[in-house]
Image (cartoon, rainbow, N blue to C red):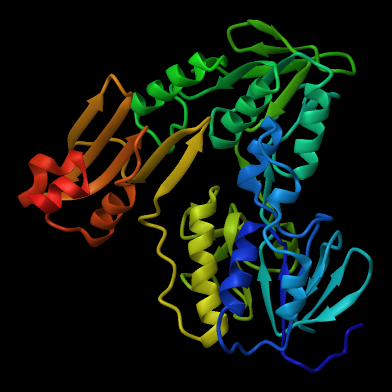
Length: 408
């Protein structure tokens, strides 16, 4: 057991959000932690998961995904334990035990355990040839299979599913995407934006079925086909399940921390134990959970401020912009994305360049924005939504962006 008496901060998990938290924390001239311990389930230090799709497509190398060199951790007094996840937390003794059986003391604990692919509960999910798309191990396996097979089905038309589909298609596979909602990226885009994305991806060679669901994955040992709810059979050599995520809460729940769909935290990312915090995909603020990296980055900054200086403005999930790039197509959304009885819509669509903008206005204030193809003004719209500015003076030019509105 580590019996050090120095002030120790321990982090369970080492993904992109945990790494951003570390970078914010050690960027300060002074912070109160004499020891910083990081425990990771993966054998690699934190890497850029957003670039896994580029790695799958052949546009990036594993080395280019690394976020910091090994020297960076030693320079900042951070001890990383790769392939040594935490198996147990003893809150009373303020210790943790890793899967190797080693025990470490902590004064404050940060849970950044992330999430895993949610399984939709289909028959045949455990057949050979059925995979998720969450980490380097998944990506390596998909690359290997793409070299030996020609057909793939991706279940899920969200960000990860579309990224997996695009990467496999660029490796020469014939890819079919299945999405149960009426349009793609239905959480980030309105129906028009989803349709524009559908058309753009089909032009790039993907076959996409929206408004449909698989009911079974067929095969004796190896996957052979996917059966849809309309009894259609799609023959395939490979199935990628990207139908949402499930927060990894087991460690927190077993330690007696309050959990719902994820680990419950307040605006300072504090759990039901005042010395234990959680951030990223494993945490829940109010009723909100988080599947994209941007809110996790905001949480990382909030928590670094709190654990670095004791000061924090708190995390507000109400206005968090979504910035994505699917197959090279930039997408942005913020605030409300669907019209209701209290909102008016301002829509601008350039059919020649396939650029689209929809703004939702309530009481002369911007309530939401959806941008497709050109997202340069996204941060400016996000600021208008966050500040609740009166946009009456520039409303006629609002859809044309910051430059026109400021000139007006």
